[in-house]
Image (cartoon, rainbow, N blue to C red):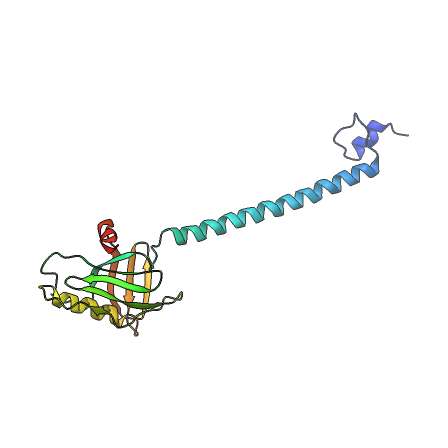
Length: 184
């Protein structure tokens, strides 16, 4: 008969100095396997969750929100050679209640907008004050672009609005802090 040390070595036991009964060895081995499997599952689940959170956070954190942001025009697609004669702030903002406020370069703009999560944006016919000024031609083009808007896209701090045919009408950027303060 083999001694206990040889028997344990033959069975592949790690520690041959302290004998562990055979049923306990298999229970310990099974427990180690189970824990290893659980740990692998937990590690992969935690990793997947972390990657998902980073993807979501990365996509959301960089884009400005349509609402509660002051948008200033960068380019109006149909403006041709018409530009601002006097340097006046031109901007609009959609509030959390879908109320639209802004300035067309001469007149104050007010109205409402219908905004949908799927990128749909429709301005109800916008109203303006009736002042006269040198930027009226530019203001008319600005208002026409807003009134023709049916969809929008935001990438980082750039807003693009499109007509019902998918044609680009205007490109906007987040307005300076001073316009945000003027809005209030």
